[in-house]
Amino acid sequence: MNWKVFFRVKPVCNMSSRLKVLLVRNNFPKKAIDLLSTRFDLEVCKMSNINGKSVTTQDIIDCIPGKFALFCFSEIDVNEAVLKAAGPNFKVVGTMSVGYNHVDLTAMKKYGVRLGYTPGVLTETVAELAVGLVIATSRRFFEANRELKTGGWKEWNPTWMCGRGISNSVVGIIGCGNIGTSIAEKLSKFKISQLLYTSRCEKPDVKALGGRLVSVDVLVKSSDFIVVAMALNEDTKFIVNRDRIASMKPNAILVNVGRGELIDQDALVEALQEKRIRGAGLDVMTPEPLPLDHPLMTMDNVLLLPHIGSSTLETEDEMAMLTAQNILAVLDGKPMPCEVIL
Ligand SMILES: O=C(O)C(=O)CO
Image 1 (tube, rainbow, N blue to C red):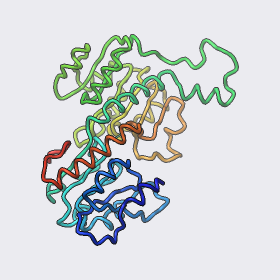
Image 2: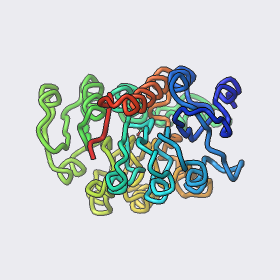
Image 3: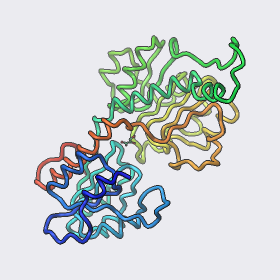
Image 4: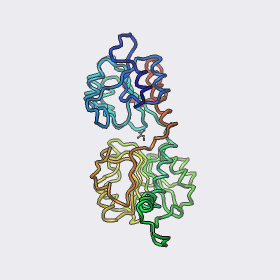
């Protein structure tokens, strides 16, 4: 626990007339908390289950009445019940994330609550992780590391721990927003044979790299590396569905840095178990955290990371600052630096 941050946050019983912000954790980066506390009283949401992974929706409902803002992140479900409990003083949700699929946009609109988010500042960090997953999965870093540490490394062997290179391969990026474009830029430096991407419209930056805009069906069928980097919404849920997984090349590697629900995970598990595709590198999955007895946990051809796409100290600081600035902008009646227009 970050006690410095914890003690700076004012207690619930503070009687000042300043507006209040509810924080869903007690260890958001210090600079952002300092900035917010110049203008607000801050309260950390109480957790009913201290062994739980995070605050629950009920914890938020219990603590949110009378607050002006909620400072949260992508695991926190901001639904109609939360907005209803908040009451008329509640004006803004600041999510420390680029994704906002955890927020009920219809209810936000109904209650007149604005939504700030943090695009841009995490683009490079998530793109770097995606490239890392591509390399680590295809070259079997984690399997090889485990073998080394458990005595499996007996001698150099020409066929042992062979992976697959990226050069001369077809790379497909599903979703070419900022993050997808940055992944395309990075992977295009690997002397690949083709760069394919999907997007609502042609992306000049990706076209300039030699990228070809194709349908999702064509991309999944043709790519050796498929990287999913899109936002989750009603239109994109299960975009990598059972049929599309079935159409992938036997040597395909699927990487996901978007959201778990973009992929039909049960169909992916089957394809991996039956070795119908080569492997998967997942920073996001369903559910999160993944239960320890989930079949994905035991597969050698799967590399799992605990949703750390944006997890560098610099990026988390910037995301927290931007979240604080979004909330402050609403207090000052100004446009937010990054607002989701509802
Ligand atoms: O910002 C987000 O939406 C994330 O998931 C960070 O990895």
